[in-house]
Image (cartoon, rainbow, N blue to C red; front, side):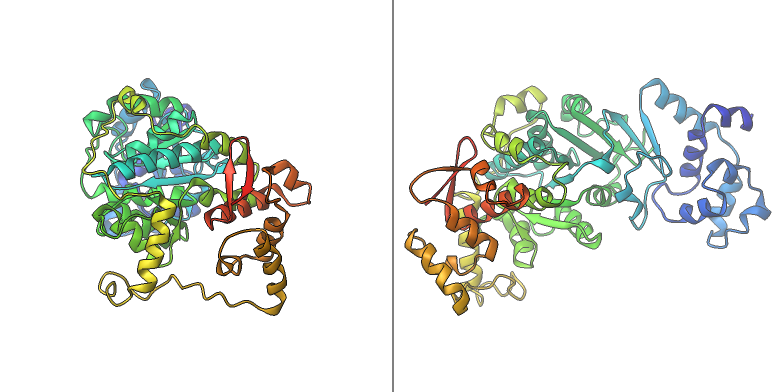
Length: 455
């Protein structure tokens, strides 16, 4: 029986191995090394052969000596009948990023149109279930723009920010992945039955849990670790200070991933988490460009600045899209007033000027005041720039050499296109990233059609 099943599908033995061991662990990696990367060889191994695996506990060894394969066959048949894909650890489509996890999944189940994530830039967008209107609109806009540029938006399909992030990516006709903390056939929350269908159309559902496994509470920290490991960066939109979203951010930091945070008012409870992350040195962002500029420079074939610009022009929040997907737009409040940029400026001011008042809430300040000091070599260039703009000199003093050069090349009396600036020999990634920095610092404004002008 074993040989005929092996000829039909080795996936059955991968499922068997995941059932006998905890699906998310590091034990199986050493087992595979001992048995030629073949779960079938592990299945055939007797007690003497398994004793070679000295790292196995007695319980694990006894589990592997149980050769009952009926449950694995049943799961395999269910997946085949319901078009559920299975990625095993040695599959070429298995995400390389997950292999570096402390406890990588032996197998992953997926439903929908799963791209090869090894050839994609994945950014996770996470946040609270109890969102404000500010958080909802921001999550939608940021996910829309990320997906427009070609990034894969990863989240957990939970109520609140997660579902809005999926909706924004879908509205942009981009790709989104929902990582679940339960079996692929379990619909949770029930409100997201329709959202599941849209995610499968524009991306995929993915889980490390076998079909029919319920949504147990202890599953979600493990799910969060997969979300962060799958992504090059994790963006926290809104979350209280002690929330699951911040657990995801912690996992991302542990996995050497970049953590991004959307600033909010220091008086808004749902912004406590992101503001805390910013205060402790994580990357503050006010738009998708802040996340993507690194990838424009280093992975330009995976993300497209032109498509990002198109997305920025059409990323306005659309409640009708949420209604169509069956997503609740209920918010606990309007949230903080002002744009993310204005809120970041206010946050910087508060942190830099009210250190004593904030000492209980924040640790050692990670945001420093701009002191305006410049070297003699920079003063001449800054003087030229100062003559052509009304901004404060202290802002000019913070510019890098490349930022100063590009700023000085922008005429002060007419809009200039990116193509025109690119004639100066700047790589498009460097140019787009620099223009983003100049806009954040209030030196220039972006206009429709990819045009820029000094303020």
